[in-house]
Length: 138
Length: 133
Image 1 (tube, each protein chain N blue to C red):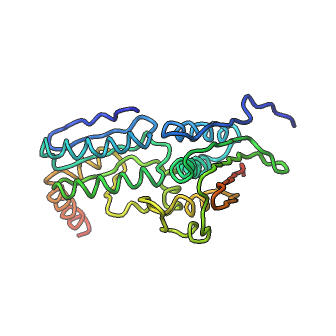
Image 2 (image 1 turned 135 degrees about the horizontal axis):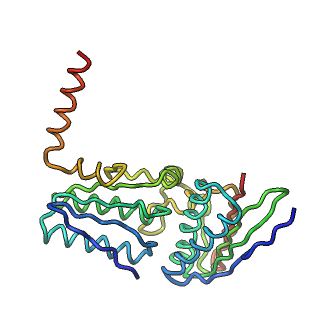
Image 3 (image 1 turned 30 degrees about the horizontal axis):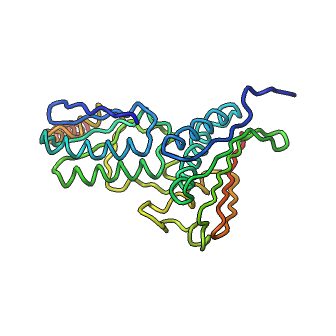
């Protein structure tokens, strides 16, 4: 079975509040294309919103790459958020519920990890942070 | 940035969020609501989020702080119209919306805020007890 998708991916800057909205929209569009359930779409878009805001607020801006992916017979969506910000010194701590470096609720990183099937983070103090998430249609 | 209109119905302020919420819009709405409560002496605030496809931690925090601020200003807040998928996602994210009263729709929200909602419940209870014999 071969399908051709009108859009298979997009790379977007994350420089201000309106970019966070654009990233959410791009993720939703692809999640619909990948035929994720409504709940899974909502979870993925919410996670993307948290992570895009992290990129903006903690990373000082960066970019988001969103694309359709396949794993075996399953179709899914992968989103990668990267910045050249200060990085995260204590990753275990940052992944703890309720821990916050700023005025937030401390749910962004730990919460978004719970919302998606795949979550990977790569961070180096002084170099930057890259977070990758993905969800597949069931 | 899109502005979210605030309507006044009697002593209740009604906000129906129909736009994709940007963070600065959220902050603006929070300030506008506090100002309107003080200016109008409103006793209740209904925030309709049926148009929202997601509630992330930023929006969740806004809802909780609007509820807290309005409480201090002697008004009650009811958040109505949350979509099922949004509710499931919010709970998994870890957002419990503590201190925020919710109702399924605007009608039920208004009933909660009406000054005689306690009396209405009493009537209902009496009816139930009577039926139960």
